[in-house]
Image (cartoon, rainbow, N blue to C red):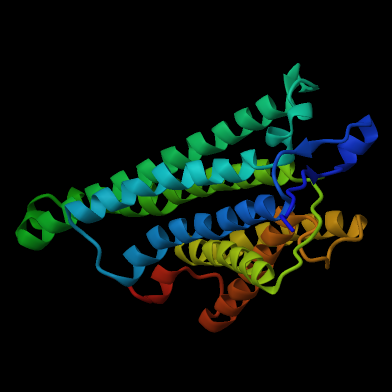
Length: 295
């Protein structure tokens, strides 16, 4: 017997309130599979650009080009996660006014674009600061006597490395990422799924959440005071999502709120790693403070 493809009935709280029964022209499994794939590959891409420069001495023209590639791919991937939500796919959602005369789609697009702009600016500033830092370091290494003639070079190096790269660049980068994530959470805030009925799907879904958490943990370890900042952030956002899911009695279901639960898995993973890091290094230190993999 040929298998039939059923449309996906989201039955979000908002749709129920408005008496709308949204349908999507795709099977339930295909829709959930697409979201899970995005939840897995998106953090993997960003992690590659977070970990490799840390564990290897990564310099030269190829390294510089490599760093600039990250937001070119990661921002579209993040956008695909958001626009896979019911708000963007369901044809009944398009025309209703949401806020300031905008539809919810338009509102979310503007929200996402603000985050993407900050993310791209932070990534560009971070990468440019690294370019300048490496150039100055090469000059100092090749001509150490020049520092005696121009001691201001040390100040310039500090400015690019600590102020632009480690502080402004990192936190501008992170602020954009958080705004993007909040846009995604908002887009999926009421969306319901039938849940994941296969072990393979469940494992991949959990993997996506863990990767999302690893990304937060590695970033926290890199940033100045990052372990403290991420600890506060994880507690605030994690508790908020937990209470939201608990309110609808779906906190411990397998994918009934697919994206929100995946991100909660990630926040929990990051919290555990962050607490372990704080305990091991004896305080709110970043990787540079500990001298770990310093190069």
